[in-house]
Length: 212
Image 1 (tube, rainbow, N blue to C red):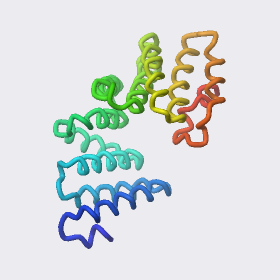
Image 2 (spheres, rainbow, N blue to C red; image 1 turned 90 degrees about the vertical axis):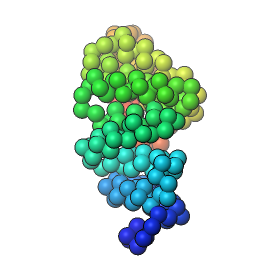
Image 3 (cartoon, rainbow, N blue to C red; image 1 turned 135 degrees about the vertical axis):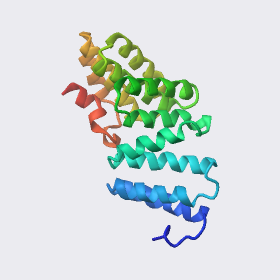
Image 4 (cartoon, helix red, strand yellow; image 1 turned 180 degrees about the vertical axis):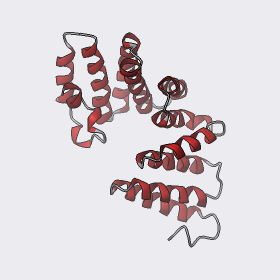
């Protein structure tokens, strides 16, 4: 109702919608969060400002969480040529999450790494780890996948977010197990003992699941 009552762009109202979208997402209502995030984009006075592009990315996240993959693909493809270079890597990761072609998914992660490496340790680690799973499990290129998984570990440690590091170590350990490495199980058990499980947003990306 906040957005419906606005007759022109309003940054203060857009910020209130940002918070409302975040709250809806936290309550398990991603479709509502996507609607609110879209409204926040529409109320941003300068659509090409950093705030405008950040809100587009948030909208894309909630569209994906709500299962609106077709719209997420359309939007992200339209935005790709125009998004500022500083946010291009983040958009490439989000595009990879909704891409239907496996090779294209891998290419988007590689593109993301070109933009993120040295700039954003956490998202660099995520892109390396997710690319490693695509390579090793979906494309069957296990040796290359293991190199990507290993490359994810240093930026994950630098990022300082325990759930991310646990997820990266899960990917590394899983691929090591697939390769028949004798110490793979021990590495996964060591990752299980690390802090961060309670804050893991996606438990299936954890060393506990990799051991199952």
